[in-house]
Image (cartoon, rainbow, N blue to C red):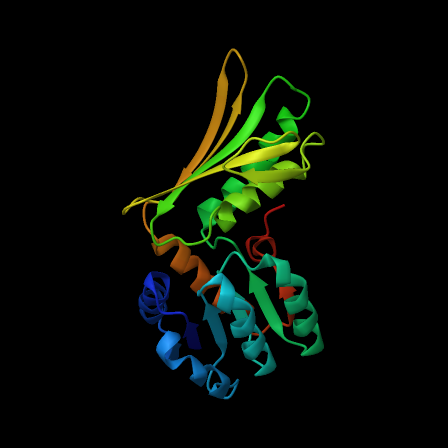
Length: 238
């Protein structure tokens, strides 16, 4: 399979390594210095594009790929306010698109565990839920897309919470506390705290390889499909 990598930072480089190791070809690599070349790629020489860039460029990158008839998966976070526009464009172009805040199998299992725990804890009003996340200094979006997805999973399963708040406590909102430190693994912790005890679940990423492998596996799976998909479609997690 021919894969275009859009965004050649740490994740892009690791995706290339994993994809080559699985027998794929990388005929196109787009980064900031050759970004104009994105408009010249097409479905004739690219089977799928994997996009890991920045929030301010993701929408345009994904749009170009869809307009060029290229299936695209995106791991960029922080641009969800324009997600519905991409969905509409994908349907208009009869294209293929999947966006995920995290491609790690472990994290996606953690998402389901978080939702289950939120349902279990709903009746116990004495417990206050919070999210704490730690990432490396190069992680620009704050809170992370993974932390926001975790917050949304709690909001959907707790009638007393209607939104999330970053680094502050607000009535009716779940707090997301974010830290950025040098060379640390991505860590997400959910806590439910009462006056007498604390319940905690945590996911710690040992390396980025799990994220890169997940992205390549999704690219393999989505290649011949049409429509808008989610990680639940890929993982078949209910």
